[in-house]
Image (cartoon, rainbow, N blue to C red; front, side, top):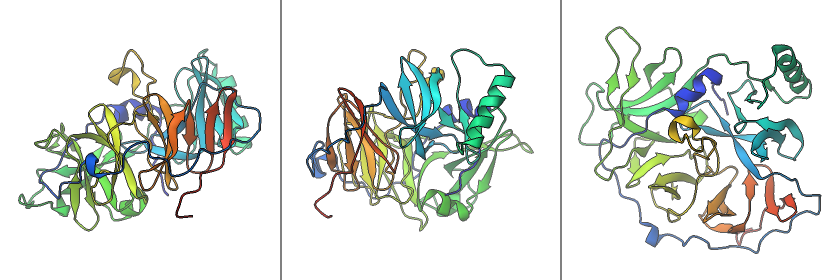
Length: 358
């Protein structure tokens, strides 16, 4: 899947990006009471491999700054020890030591890692470390250049927009950059991001002759900011959703309702209750000055699964919305290829649980 480069100078802009809501109502999804109860376990818990446990406090999905909302990366994790963060391959091999003041993230397809060491490095040491990463096939350190990113919104000022229904012609692609600008939807982006996009409604702003950009979110009557629109022109919204994640080509996507997250299917039905906490990404100082490294998003499904956290305990969700690993563990991490489960002696790799359909 193509990813658009977005580097260090754009990271703050992405965290400040607005969210919004539908211009018109589509079918209302089923309520959580009609969906499977959270905490349902499809199989017994997995048996961890006997390898020595990794001593990290937390292992978190890599946040990739290529779009808003951010997209999750595959093949690597960021991990913390003594309050500082590093980078490891999915198999547990350390790539960057736990010296960064915030979770390691990636700025796009160039595999540039955003890593802020607690003690500043001179450029000679920075370049030498970056060269070591490149030689090992692990990308490079981000030197702090600018870049671009993708954001999708529903343009309430689109000429000729049908105000009685969802009108696909009003879907816009905001190409963030310096400066950014607004464009009609490009068909290739459906292939990149999937055929069901999280969007928000907004008025297009910008002085005549200057680059355009989406204005503040326009919520619907339920207070929802985000909703979903499909390539075929159909749409649905989740009442009260203030944030939404990507489906890509998966069956479920995470949506934030109030302070918690639920998972919704492609027909707009809630498959879980809104009981899960954010587990990846970073809120940043603007959104959370007291705890800027606090996670921002619930996990998108990757290859059919997502790590989840409920009431401070961790588990694993499958594509039906069932907790195939119940939320009973001090930590679970999954980025699409490798499952890690935390035990008293540290983190261990584990086999994916078998479901009743396998």
